[in-house]
Image (cartoon, rainbow, N blue to C red; front, top):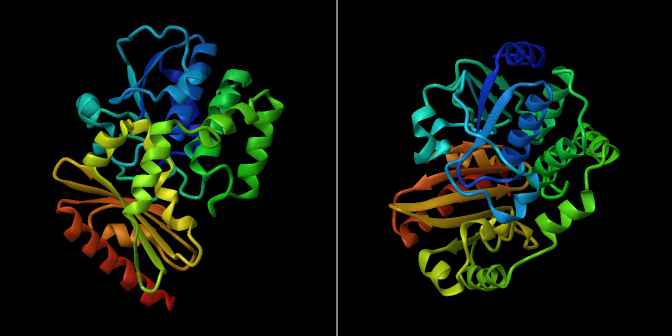
Length: 316
């Protein structure tokens, strides 16, 4: 395990640095990755950010005008708790990661060096410390990157992972020129027609258990075909069940080849990561995920059973 000063010292010694983001990229992996990228360029180093999946259009403001390919001397993974999350296109780097910078308690310690801070609300919250430790003065581009990571991994600062340090960091980014209104609007205030159609579909799939204390929605391939929604338009759907009054455990089932990817969101007293660990997954106490290789009905039955047990254990 490394400290921020140790990670900075290591990065200062490297020249050509490849930055890996996780598949189905979100604002934290992209904001952290491109924040580091711009900082390394400011130091005169060569760097490149890569991801197995296309970068969703709402994050286009993070991208540089051009980014030449490099022959990496060093490989850094950001916000990647498990090498499997790199996706097929980047699987060749799974056992070649020199430094992992992450905030997930479920991190597999797969990298040669790991900087892990489970109490951080987002990897971006750590990344700005690294950037400053590299003696780089953050400009507006970097501030936009860090703010993006912070706001997306905290649900626009609504989640229980938000601390005073998180809020002070976000305020610092605004002082540095981060376009908070524009970013918040893109991330939380704008939806495509396909996204609205998908929300209607998933609400039709809503199932309650334990007298409404558990709520489950499903996203199937057939729904995607009917609505025309793309992967990047599904962000935030997992928060819908948890937003319902009285719900203690909100669950989203997302159809994938061979089964369903599960997202679990919980209130305090119920550990989402513990629920997902029963199926080989992990994450944070209030937000976690796993995969169940079963058809929809069997999958829903299994995850509801695990959620019921967690509620009963918590006395809810």
